[in-house]
Length: 217
Ligand SMILES: Nc1nc2c(ncn2[C@@H]2O[C@H](COP(=O)(O)OP(=O)(O)OP(=O)(O)O)[C@@H](O)[C@H]2O)c(=O)[nH]1
Ligand SMILES: [Zn+2]
Image 1 (cartoon, rainbow, N blue to C red):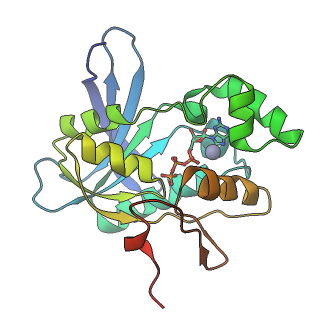
Image 2 (image 1 turned 45 degrees about the vertical axis):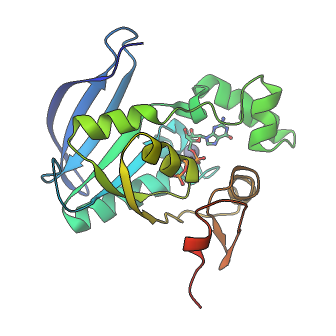
């Protein structure tokens, strides 16, 4: 497979301020990803505030309460705008890589009692089909080598580190918890090792990053 290319960019005024929207594409498959960039991020000595946000049409655009995605998207853009500099990669891997129609199929199975992982497996997919390597390639194309990553997902940190992106800090992104996504967040914490805080209690999983994340009393 070819490597992703930066193909075009433009100004994008948003309710969180003025960003540059940068378009990336794989020449062979035409698979697209985008990044929102605020300020001068290339070749910075300082770590850049960054978010890898996986596409969630239902949460990001359709106001779904079944997940935390829309809340995380808004919170990440707000934090970047407060710093005045940063990158949000909009990683076009809808439904953890299974696509919107299969995500609806998974939701249908969840309506019948399955959790997010059980539903994915019942449909013949892995629990998470995403590949975050392309995000490291996008950081490199933007000249970003050192990041403070807004995430609760240890896999994103691990993949960036393995791909040579220096993750100097993880910034938690615990927003949007509600009665419809409690189980979803619980499954992420208990079965996927994500750092999720519920009611002040942190799920400490068997994960190398947990120890540095224990909240101070
Ligand atoms: N297959 C599937 N995907 C889902 C479901 N709910 C949300 N998603 C997708 O999950 C992705 C977001 O992943 P999450 O696991 O919530 O969070 P993350 O991006 O890994 O981690 P954070 O950086 O902490 O947000 C998006 O692509 C959503 O479309 C679901 O029930 N089934
Ligand atoms: Zn979502």
